[in-house]
Length: 71
Image (cartoon, rainbow, N blue to C red):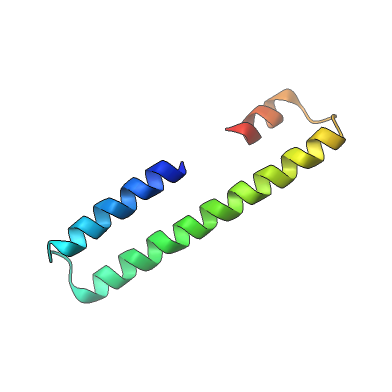
């Protein structure tokens, strides 16, 4: 999931919350879930960059795996 998609989801949830539709507990849960998803996405990006740095030093990784890391 791209960071632009995460931003879009966050904006949709914030708009939903502003309209007063979800109950208080649901609002809290939704915001916590989105924040956790953003943190996981950031960690995934960091791990991908670390893996790519390792690959550049040791160029024995398969092309398929390298392409998957760039996605």
